[in-house]
Amino acid sequence: MKKKITYTVFSILLFCISSIASSNSNQLLENRYAEILTKLRCLVCQNQSLADSDADLAQDLREKVRSMLERGKTDEEIYNFMEERYGSFALYEPPFNKKTIFLWIAPSILLLFVLIFLYYRFFRSQE
Image 1 (cartoon, rainbow, N blue to C red):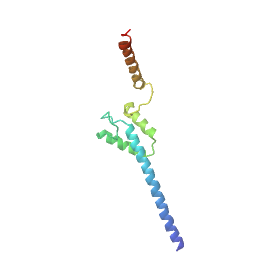
Image 2: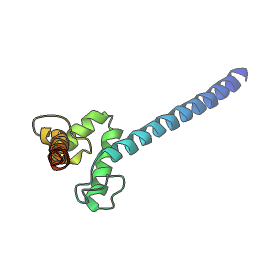
Image 3: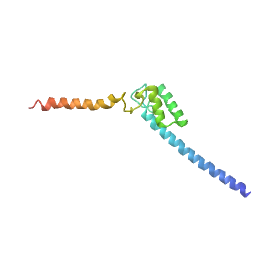
Image 4: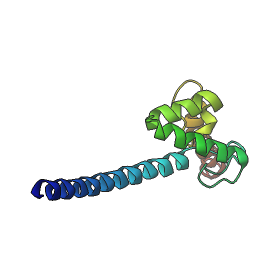
């Protein structure tokens, strides 16, 4: 009788521990899912993340991201998949490489031209 009670208590304890661990892992998975969706751009709306968009394609991509997470894919693997399939435009933060160098350097070049223009417009004209 004592063995049966001990076994039952052990089973209940094991069930409680596994359910707590399962809920923690589910919460971590949901947090990763939400973070990934905010870093991916909706290809239809183009100005919204996958988390914000209601487009049909965005819903399909959200399901794809969820299934990839459930299969154990890393965040980097998911971003690489999206970039390979849809290009760097699918990422809100495109990588710095020869294809996207203009995206990263253009603001600095534009600022430089504006400063040169302002210098010649205001300071050189006063001399």
